[in-house]
Image (tube, rainbow, N blue to C red):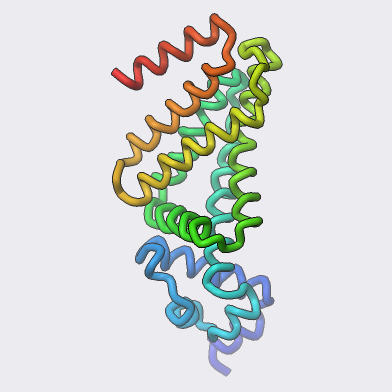
Length: 219
C-alpha cells in the first residue's frame, strides 16, 4: 500500500476538508482570484473534483469559506489588542487588519476580490451580509465604549457608526485589492474613516483630538 493511499485512508473528512481549503488558499495567494479552479484544486489537493463538492461545495462555497477565514484571521488578531481607550482601540483595529493584509497580500487580495465578486453577483448574499456585520461589530464596540465614557454624545447609534467605518474600510480594501493604492494609502484612508465617523458624534473636547488627527492625515 502506498504512503499516499495510507494517508488518504487515515484522514478524516474534516482533515481532507481542511487540506482542500488550505490548498485553495495557497493557490489564491500565488495565482490570484482567477487562478482558482476546481480541477487545479483537486489536483493540488490529491482528491477528485466530486470529493471537493461532497466536502465543501462548488467554487462559490470555497470562496465564501476562504473569505470567512480571512475575517476570522483578522478577528483572532484583534482579540490580542490590549488598548482600553476607545480611540486607540479603533485605531489598532485598522492597524491590525491592514497588517494582516500586508502579511499575505496574495491571499487577502484574492479573498477580497472573491467577496466583491460574490456581492456584485448576488451570490450567497445572506452569508456575505453576516461576514460584513461581524467586521462592522469590531468598530461598533469601540464607538459604544466611547459613548459610554462620554467622549461621544450618543446622538448617532454606535451600530451606525461601526457600519460606516466598516464601509469606508471596505471601499479602501477594494481599491487596494484592485492595485489602485498601496497598503499605506489603504491604512490612511481607513484611519480617516475612523476619525471622520467618530467626529460626527464626538463631544467638543474629543472632536478637537479627532480633527487634529484628520489634519495630520490630510496635510
